[in-house]
Amino acid sequence: MKILVVEDNRDIAENIADYLEPRGHCLDFASDGKQGLQLALDENFDVIVLDVMLPRMDGMTICQRLREANIATPVLMLTARDQLDDKLAGFQAGADDYLVKPFSVKELEARLNALLKRIHHFGDNSALRIADLEFNQQTLQASRAGVSLELNPIQRKLLELLMKSSPAVVKRDRLEALIWGDLPPDNDILRTHIYSLRNVIDKPFGKKLLHTVHGIGYRLAED
Image (cartoon, rainbow, N blue to C red; front, side):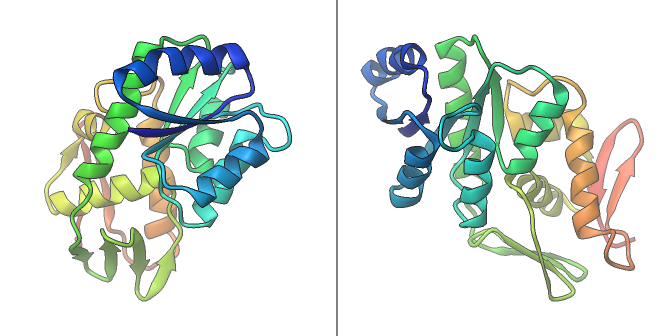
């Protein structure tokens, strides 16, 4: 796995390197935000480990810039903060996962492997269509009624999973497992992501496609 670690704490960066490099992973490091952004834009990485608090440019801004540049590399954010609002802000910026300091490097590797596995799982190149909603699994572009939809990485994954399962109901725990693997985030993050996805794919249009099946899960269908 080729990993970019953007972390200004030398001890943390060395601890990550000491554990991951002997296990066969290839790591590049940046100690400030601008350097990290430039590396992420110039080179191809399998995953990016991104600290939130960085000199010269913070992690949230870096993540937003990457998504604006259509770089879909999975991002795991590191932070000393453990507030729900901070986590939601990270996901909204385009992060795929979140790890609070201090953390176990074993857990870090497990989460990175889970992120990479999900990217490979979502590699089908065919286009998915439900009514006037379309998602291209190769370009990761979504549109409805010819209007391009702006989705963050979690929203894209949810949309793809729900479209592949349509018209069946997908249970909450299955969605959580497919998105976050064996390490789902705490609190009710899934409901928040579903709400934000509905605001993008349904709210601006006249017909509802994303349905909540109370106590069970969610379905995407034309009814």
